[in-house]
Each structure stands twice: as C-alpha cells, then as structure tokens.
Length: 241
Image (cartoon, rainbow, N blue to C red; front, side, top):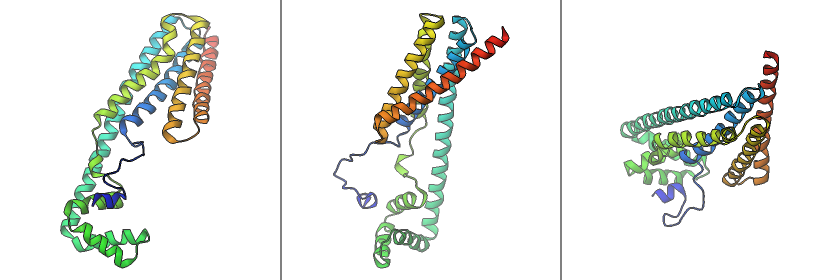
C-alpha cells in the first residue's frame, strides 16, 4: 500500500538524494554561515589594525558563540517543528476516528483534485481508509505535507550545525595562529575563498545546478562580505587612531 501512496516500487532503490535530510542541510548551511561570519569578523577586526592576539580572540569568540547559537537554534526549531507535526497528526487521527465518512470523502476529493476520475478516486479512498495506519499516513502526506515516519530527532542536526559552523569559522582564523599582519590577512582571504568555492561546488552537486556557477556565487558572496567588513574595520581603526 505504501508503494501505491508514494508511486514507487517497494523493491526498487531510489536514485534520489535525501536533500531534505536535517543533518546534510544543517552541515552545509552551518559551514557556510561559519565561514561568512568569521571571515567577516576576522578581517573586520584586522582592518582596524588590531593586534594578532585581538584578532585571534575575536575569531575564537565568534567561533564559539556562533557554534552554540547555531546548535541551539537548530535544536529548538527542529523540536518545535516535530511537536507541531505530532500535534497535527493527533488531530488528524482523532478526526479519522470520529468522522470516518467525511475523511473518506475528503481523501477522495484530494485525488480528484489530482485528476483522478470520481469513481476511481472513491475506490482508492475506500481502500486506503480500510487500514487506520495507512489512512493516517495518506492524510498526513497529502493533506498536511507531513511524513509520519520521518519526524526525526533534533539532536543530529544540532550536532551537525555546531561542528560544521565551527569548521567553517575556523578556516579563516587558521593563519592568525601562525602569522600576523598582511600575510595573515591574505591567508584568511585565500583559505576563505577556497572553502567558499568548495561549499559552492557541494551545493551545486546536491542541487543539480552548474557547479562552476554555484561555486562562483558562493565565492562572490564571501568576497563581498569580507571586503565590506575589512573596509569598515579599516575606516573605524583609522578614525579611532
């Protein structure tokens, strides 16, 4: 029955990537946010002619604050989303129990809206409504857009967010542990640019879009963010001096 609902052969292996996976999404977004946040912060502070120690301190603070913030935000948002989905499922379960005929007609109407003839839609609705679990699953997917078996735990995306943000934020900070001044600034720009290109390429692979185009877009965003914050930091540093 599930194969009929999803339109897939139950014995076949799907060729589609799990682009909705909370872990993958959180990792890609977290790394991108970490890179943009800290490359901007590091170069902004460096542009103000701050010492290497100050730049390192600011970068580490940005890394820790951003990582914990991303993880907490992901944990709360996914948990709230899960709780809302479970609430809607409970409401739908109660309606199926109390108003089975109305829910059957509603299910048939959803299939009719998709172009299925009236008699066929009623037949399909009766078949699916015969099993409580299948009925709930079908209403959840078609009416609510919820996949009951895919609620997931908020812990995994939260961990992915923390780690990926930290990695992204660490990259532009690395040169400041080994150098200072112009050399460290250039190192931050080069490492940040390389990571931006890599993230753009990964996004291109995942979305099926041209890899070069996605990499160029990610690089352009990173360079603009870094350039603007460096200029602002330089102006504030010059004004303060």
